[in-house]
Image (cartoon, rainbow, N blue to C red):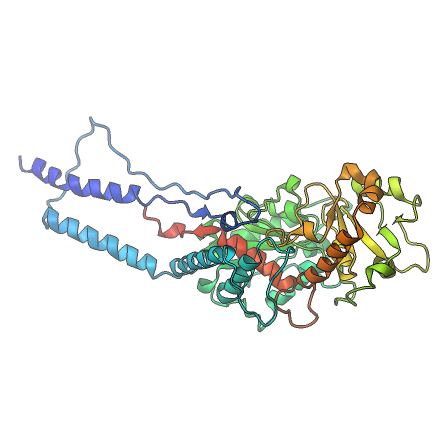
Length: 486
């Protein structure tokens, strides 16, 4: 008769434990779209939450015999007090973790950016004080950039060997990919940390361009080698390090300027769905998600360095619109069919005449046509900016680079694919005053797309890419799945 009271004395403790478990079921990542709260900012609210299932206690059926519990050596009050101390110790351990401290710092940064977005106060900056309509919210961007410089740390995984890992092309149409990897691997990069516990984001340093070059066999159209490398690499770092599993990849990023970047990421579902994908092929119809992915500008550096910037004044630009490029996709087919050799004002070529300079044609044109090829991105956008030529975007589903910060309508023209026949009418309808404004703003925004020769400079394209990654990290909260009781 003594066993029943002992069982009853344990039941309150079991109830407390169950309540403790039930109150600690959290999502590992919750979306917090900072820019939604700021005036004149685009809304990106499609982030998906990451969830994990906790082990549930198995309740024996009513007819099962009750287990024989040992007689407790302490009173119920002492057991409850001990449980409280254990819970408090768990909370203190969590608060002392590096991830908890990082999330606390990010919360303060979000508040600071939000306040700046609604403020008219101007912060001093020796290099740039963002102003004018080229920015969606100049003060919010400036404060965000300064917070990034204080808090942003990136851990580059050391696993993997060149040429597929840790290096990429720096003298080709895929230069954006190679130059970024090069800068992240370079000694003296203030954003890189060798201590993963200090990192806000983690970089997967593989080159999709390198994989295509060394692993893809065109004759057999065999992508299995690329698939195997990506799958094995993510599996390796998830086994060797705790950080991928901690967030299911949400604080990790990959970067690719190759057309096959989106496809390569799809071989690992969590990389495709959860991680930050920095892509030149920023096509919403192919799964690009602006709330978590980053649009990477495509920059063609044939010599590895930026040539001369700028061009003549508007009065010295006799050509209304210009394009030169091979037949490469449906949009270019429509453009060439409609305008090739048809009009002196809208000069469209599949191949420039012998002796005619491409750069010279850019500098003689008021508008530079930038149609998508097989994929949405085009190096012509940046080429136009480098020549002080107003870019004309002709695409479907393309998210232009740094669109969360820059107001593209203020310095470019967008023409729908079904309006290709009306290009001359649309561009001729832009008044001289409007055009001068557009061109002046192209010169202002140019600095954000320049690849600095030598050491990257503040607010250049390298730092703008980092800032875009920073914003995506700001918009999520990470909780270590390994620290959830269960």
